[in-house]
Length: 228
Image (cartoon, rainbow, N blue to C red; front, side, top):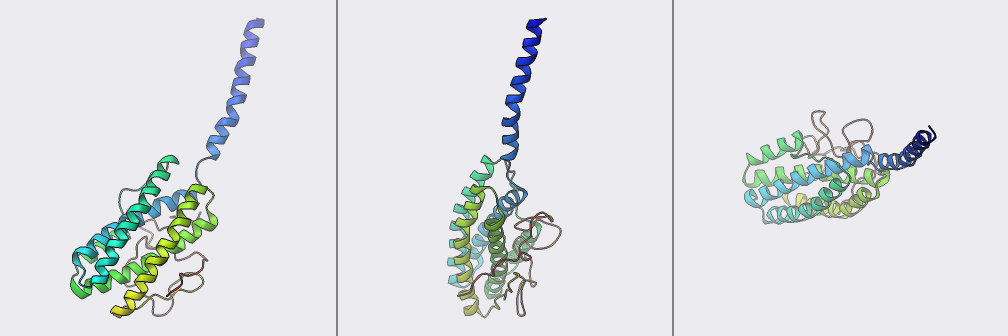
């Protein structure tokens, strides 16, 4: 009997020892904010790579072609880090862009020449505003350091893209969406002309989150991207 009691005590001690380890493992899971940002940024990258290739193929303006090439390079590099981090954190990434992003790609596919150039720049401006706001939200609200680091690394890249797009938009006569302190398009904005990457429609996830747990881009109270 004594031996059985000792075995029972040992088993109990083993279980007690395992409990903190299990709790630590559960605590290590990324937050909803971190998870949704990784997923949304991956979809932004998928969109930008495809849209960048379209710009190189269909663009009439050489600057559109050049920006498209730069976007493909930068977002491919960024997505390698996103995929690696998601794998480490056991976060499942979507395999396709959002429904809104796909609508933009389908629309661009049906355009050509100067019409394509203007539509491409318009969609890219709106999409980069949203991606920047989602990234700012992750930096301020994210809890998993590896994901926050991705956002910190991505922000200057996205900002540089946006600044280049603003300069190109002025050259092509494309209206630049004005953003308020809350990140919403102001008068003269072009955000409603075509669905933006990770758009705010309810049918598909928006960068920064799909539910009420974390703000979606375009609604976060974060500083608007500066314009050069």
